[in-house]
Image (cartoon, rainbow, N blue to C red; front, side):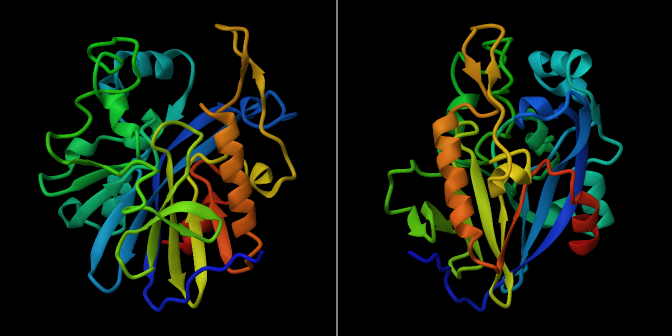
Length: 292
C-alpha cells in the first residue's frame, strides 16, 4: 500500500538552533562502528507558523551550567560524557532574533538531559509539552530529589506550565497519518503534526512539518542516532549491560523503537520527505545554513 500525506496549503518555517554538542562513542549506537568518540550536535528547532505568527520550539538542548542538572547527570557529565556548549539554545535564539517572550510553546521530543536545557528561563505564559508517559518521570519517588540517583528533576518545569499529551490509546486526541498510527494536528491546519514515537524512552515524540509545496520534514529526535540505521544500511548496536549482564541498546524498548523505524522507512518512500535526527553529525553545518 502506498503512503500518502495530505495536500495542504498551510506551512511552517523551520529554523535550526545550535544547542550544544556531545562527544559520543558511536559503537554504542551503531553496530560495527569504530571505538572513536564523535562530536555530535544536539539540535533544537524553532518552528514558525505563518498563519498565526506563533513560534514553537522543539527541544532545548544542553544547558551551560551543568552543575544545575540533577547530581546523577552532573556526575555523568563530569566523569563519563564530555559536552561542548559554547553556544546554547538561548544564544542561538538571540542570534536568530527570536525573543523568549515570543515563544508560546516548547515541545520536548523526550526528557533526557541533552534535550531539556533550562525551561525556567522562559516566562510564565510559555507552555511545555511532553509526550504520553513522560510526566511520570518527573513525579513520585523515582524522580529527583526523592531519588538522588535519578536523571529526572521533579522541579524541571514551573508549576502549572507542563502539558502531558494524551495516552496513545486515546483516539479522541490521536489520529493515524501515513504510516503512523498516532499523530496529532498541532495547529489544526495540517502544517505540523506531533507523531507518537515510542521506544527510545517514555514520551518520545517526533514532529512532522509541512514546509511548503508538498515538502515535508520529520524531526525524528532520538528515533536513531545514525541515518544509516534509518535507511536500513546499518544496524542498531546491541551490547552487554555491565550492570545486569543482559543485552542493551540505546533505546529503552528496542522492539518499539525498531517498529517506529520501520514506519519512518515507509514514510521515506515518498520523495518529498526528509528526516533529520537530533544528533546527526553528517549534515549539521549544511542544515544550519539551509534553515538559518
